[in-house]
Image (cartoon, rainbow, N blue to C red; front, side, top):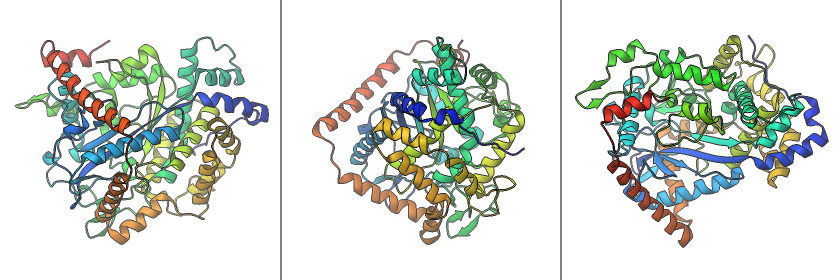
Length: 524
């Protein structure tokens, strides 16, 4: 089956509708989550040190935490009224963190730095001795047994955004469903409508923002025949995003889930079943050893977040609440786009152009027609994404019978000028039309793709050398920017308060940890 790209009905693009749309888009909200490994500034080796205490508690700090590994920093911005404002907060978090790091730097590439010879020397994230903190560490221990710990060192950017209920009601009325009184129903429908269309153009996102065509030899590969070997560097020529390929979180267990993105109920049902359906390989691992829990359970998934999806419907969770329960109880609040590599040329991991482009593509996904997925279409989506990640820049790779990937991308972008103009008007900027033009120039060959630039850099310098040079350059540039005294004091106070909160959380433990894990997994 050939994948059909989303199309926007012509009546939506009429001038009077675009005027209304620009007003409704002002209700969008944005947030960013950005990961980055701590590495030794001289060697580029993975840091073995604990999460810096001056950054606060990784468990309770609202903006600076860790992801799968203790060495994998994660920055989480608040919610903002524009992509630019979210990037500005991300910049402040980097400035503050760089002031704390002494002999370490933040690795700027999605694929990791020099890793230890043994998986066991990749440190798991530690969140203290509270029940919820221990649960988070056990979950990561389980990931290590299931996928190998080196997978816990791959980093990326998550782009969070939401649309206003007024936009969803307006879109429903245009689609012939004017009764928008059930805001949650209309909202959930709109977000899953958007998810399906994003998945249909995910290959284009990887083509334009993918920046991980290489790995260091310390990232142990099962097969090297797909790589050109130069020194320590393993390069997949023509690749866009190895992070989003089968080198990442892929397994027979996850492939068995068959997540359905047609509506909230089917999505939650398939995820919930995976958390409770035993998987023989994980049963063979066992639940515990002499060190305690090896994994939270022996099911296909320990928790829903283990399923690695390129985009997720999200709802802010209440304390102790599982992700799927939050969605079932209160519906979708925002979308998390996860298919974005770190841009090593942007010191915060994502450029203004990229943020504007993703906003444009997500808005288009919300507005375009979005038929329900069939099994055949889902297979086609997976196939084209796999080809794009490994070989999207190769001229012999075709999107369909007639077009290369670049030609298909140019055709899709050809009708998006009115949407870009509406976003420009909504956010009082020219960045969206600028990002659209930049994408076209990269696809028509006038400018190189980001993954082309990375490929040339690692051919010349090597994966490790290129990454470490950029890491030190970014660190030096952050050192030249000073936070205001008030901002610095607030961030220092926030870090200290998070340490106090973590201690209070541990002191409030009730019952056994075994009972806590069981209640968490089986909550209704």
